[in-house]
Image (cartoon, rainbow, N blue to C red):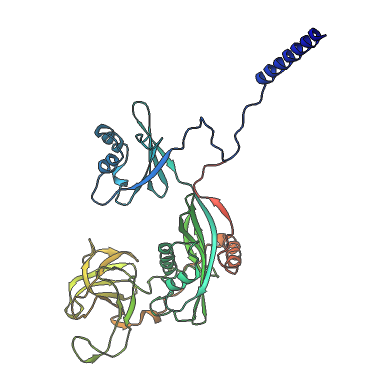
Length: 420
């Protein structure tokens, strides 16, 4: 009896052991619960940023991270020195704290990152594109002191960085450069609306893209602009399809503030008596570029008494423009030279009878001084009749977007992403 029980126990144990071996051979792969570190897992690599400081070379930066002299020379040769500047941030990766770097990456420009990877016997350089995405947004607001101040208040920080707000202000000033003198036409209570493309990188940076449409309400008068391309050349047109471009700019300098207006008798700050002022003075930082208001031919450059250094440009229809108190002249600007509208001809200074840096600008018709803001410069060129239906369709869509709610992302598309 006892032998029978013993044999039964041995058989049962044999079956149990055999089943366990069968299960072990066919067991599922072990899993690790999320957040639980496996005992044989590799510790994560360590990445640390380092900045290329002013006055130092790549050799200094790489040596800080333990690269030998030969490696430093080899790795530095793989980077374009023209794209290297103080302030660039290099990301250095190590497998673990006490190891040599196995990877170095640096953003060499808005569109590209270079990644350097250590191989068994050398280093490999790989250029990686930075993806940018484009969406369409709308901003709107009221103007109290300046267009930039209005944009600064109306645009959320998360939507555009400060320097991009400044860029947008200048973009709008360029769009309406033929219709408005932003130093004197804008008044508190005026309003703006703008629809533009905004570029956002995969790293979260934002940039101002193309302005698509804008309108301003200036002293109760609406001024509109719609972007449209003719023969692959973009331009801005009003609601009727007339080009905003005119023969002359309203203001020939990137101004800070206006200091004296046309045709106002004033006490001259140097001579000490009142006299008629036949031009417009734009106070601006020394060295600010001065642009030719229109296409023309340079009549003279040089010293001209109280005007100091002056450029005189002759245009069609008996019109001449004068630019006085300049610090200096742009290269190639001399008597007989042709200049184009918007071309830099000189730089703001305080030469002659001037108490501070500013541009003295005169607009003369047949020798008589005229207020350029009151001169009728005519209508712009119309869109070709064959393109008018396409323009009207774009204008209707852009008008709808101008009236939409502020800071609305209308559409999103990759700017430079590879096709799916």
